[in-house]
Image 1 (tube, one colour):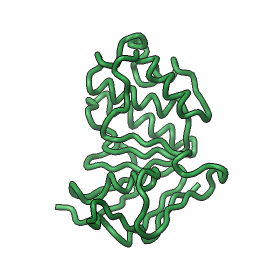
Image 2 (cartoon, one colour; image 1 turned 90 degrees about the vertical axis):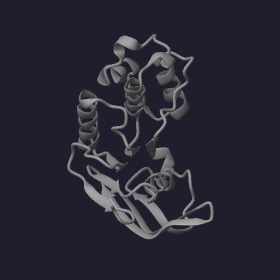
Image 3 (cartoon, one colour; image 1 turned 180 degrees about the vertical axis):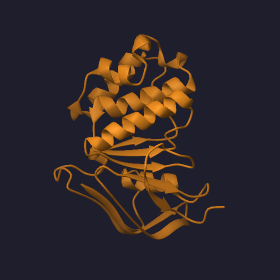
Length: 200
């Protein structure tokens, strides 16, 4: 499987964010997208996820399921954790399993993998920021998709959580998955780098 972009141009609110951007990543690889704030890291992830349309150029996923779009083969983990506060931890994960469909894994095992199995009946509103991020990570495990698009995935995670994340990402790569992560810091894994704009 290979994700590639050729001559990608992004325009938002009438302003060119970046242009003529080329990138490539293959199965088993992490592409770390780096750049100053406002350089377009999040915009690139949103373009790949199909949430924005490129002003020019093309993004392709070769070797994936030809019947599905890139968006249908990707998980997008943004800055905000997409949770329903009134639902329990378990109910949130069940909602995402039903909504996303696809290859489904065991809910209890997904929560155990992120250290939230003890909180399955707790309303999501009671979770700390780090726990909310862990629940979002459980969504990546509950419904398997080959492409993970992650925006500052370490946000709100303590040292133990960052180690857990690196382990989950490593397992995903070992299964032939692919990760594109916008980040300012270390992901704890070897990564190919894509720099957008000029770093300070």
